[in-house]
Image (cartoon, rainbow, N blue to C red; front, side, top):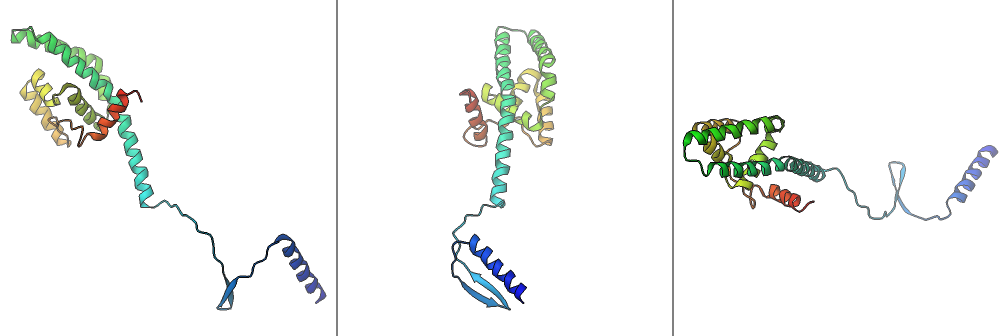
Length: 192
């Protein structure tokens, strides 16, 4: 008995020296257990709920879109420059045979230079490139193909594009559907 009393006394002394402040709290006895009622300070809980996941997903999508636009925008600028060069070369030409010869030369030169890098683009990057080419030249990809390769080629490629859910006749809408792309292009033009 004295051992137990000594142990309890030592326990209370140890607890008393550690806890300088003692507070009396309300308690309830429930099923033989004493449950203290303590008022806790307000806490803010931030979880990984639907909204946080959606926000992260949207950030990843925007980062991917920016990456894709930055990757293909130089090609759109080169395409606009090449279209202007070809137009300048074709302006004085009177005969259709000479016109076709110039277009074939330019086509072969472009394929030699750009075929490999353009084949490495993803489908989404290709779609963005078509929209940016429209932005830079004010003509759809369909119009360019029809002008330089003929109507049959243009309709063939339009059919292939439609099979994969794209449209070569789609216009660039900087205030609507393409507003995010336009915002990224403006950042690029400002040097950001």
